[in-house]
Image 1: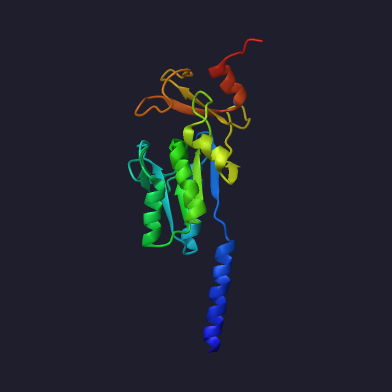
Image 2: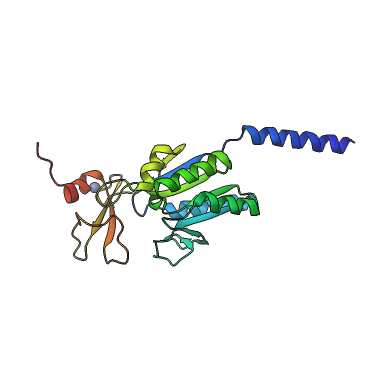
Length: 217
Ligand SMILES: [Zn+2]
């Protein structure tokens, strides 16, 4: 009887805890090469180490490291589900959670989420009570927010900037797209797939001088 009482007490506390525990939507944003994927993989590893179940998603259009995995520049890698513009993330995550309860969802390349997909993640957090940790770029090569970053910046519970530096030593919060001659590109599609362009993170002052130019006063 005593064991049963203890077990009941434990279950009661657990259910009370579950009721008061509110999952949150986290957005970790930065310019390029600030270690977003490394931070994601480290955090996913922390969950795994504690015996907690998480799943990772990344954008289907990013083929830099092959399909279905997140790879960091320092060599860590983990398999990942891919999301395309038409993917319903709520349905996919709900299905995974039905198979076995999830403790966290990680989203890499979160800037490529649509407004609807950010809303789906909000339902995952609020209705399934699963924390979502999204990692992505804040702005594109013209200094504009991506759809995913726009709505994550607007709607996430917690915003955290992952910092990197410009060649001048200031904090770099902009991304410059450079052509094969090293010149800044000022026009073009937000997402360039398979091109030879490269990207460099810079501070606003250097981004401004290369991309926006001097504003007429
Ligand atoms: Zn600079």
